Length: 491
Image 1 (cartoon, rainbow, N blue to C red):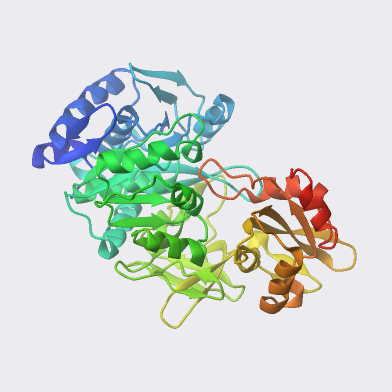
Image 2 (image 1 turned 180 degrees about the vertical axis):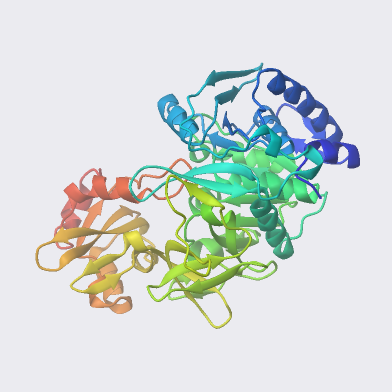
């Protein structure tokens, strides 16, 4: 298949392509709308060959059309969410070499000019191939992602990387023109972009859901209705979203839904069990922007196993190599890897393995168990403690609604293990401590604890560890004092 919407419009004019609140379109109709956008963009100088175009993208037809035109024309895109401040958008656009930041709305495509830094991916006009012969090594997208220093990394992903990733995904989870993948993840993330490329290459449909201004967690009813209304066959979610959906008494998964891809964070065994009880087939997955989304996924038709309280993130997809380094970091190699990072080197070994910041273990069957981030690892008294297994142990108590584990400085041990808890009914500090003593090594047991009303989340629904640590640290206390503190109003 192809990433060119105009080719799909010619080859499959009557095949369903896009579903939204505004319209339901075939590929022929979508290509016609994209042609009008192409002419508008071309007349305004947005489609300068080889020059990155910055898009403020919503999960809407207008944004999808803008993205598809750029894909067809071979113009790399860098996408931002609407909540990204204009100053930050301008800075990132300049670093990516974008001349324009395009803001699609319901009426027209408006734009503001950006000042490129000169560090973006560029080609001279003479080097740009024809539309029928786009070099697969050309950048398709430059994706911002958080960096360890606080400055966003800009990850350059080629057309070949997106194609290889889509084919690897389809080898495990085949798509057909009957499929409808609900796009509720942001197009500014590689997970959202990958839904578009997988659907294009399969000639299947994209169902668009733009949540209310409060975000997905504030519009769960809308998300549930979108799944039903579009008769989605697939959806990608993070565990927080799936958990919140399952909490709703009125949530009834549509019969059309054949799989939920669950990634972005670790899932608890209880969440997987609850989903199965509601008739949902959950495929856990591990991925990262530098590897163009999925690296591992649960084999379709199987249930993810659990080891040590941690749910498997699946097995390496076809064509993707996976290993664990001597420092326990997950390493990845294969055709889905990023071409480069702008402004900093891509962390590759001499033989081409991407060294991630994630810690993990592989079992005899090739199942990957993600232990957390190396940068989140706590070193206490010379012992290494990874937060995820401790959080999994805490979450197994029915009265712990949510948990975040982190380290705090200590003059004697270097760091102490601490945790922030959201409490449910019937909380008993002694019972939780007894569980920790039974299931964890002494060094891994939290010595300090804080009670919060809720754990801060990122825009995509993942746990915001840094913000949780900052909020919880001033409220940390001993377990002995916790019952008194728990009766007070949580922070």
